[in-house]
Image 1: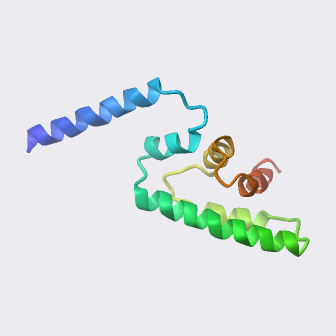
Image 2: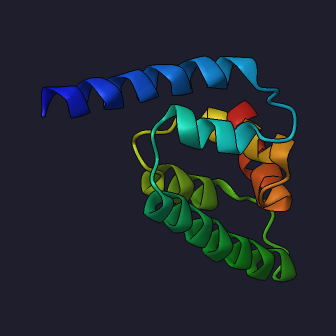
Length: 111
């Protein structure tokens, strides 16, 4: 059992080294996922949340609603505690993951 644990620890260490070696351009969100040890279910939950918030944003936009602070509050509350909302918004913008939503959310960080 100790041998298996040692191998897992070595793999985690090598993963950390590989993360430092690879280019991040275009894969900023993916890098956050790996660096913060998110599983597939957590990423799918995040993407589903962004899909819901994007639909809500489009509905609000159609109704000429221009303040997206409530959307931002929902985003922060529903985001896994493993991630920082500022880092996620920036990474998603760079990787073009829900860019329109992330642009609106970014305005609430800056404002």
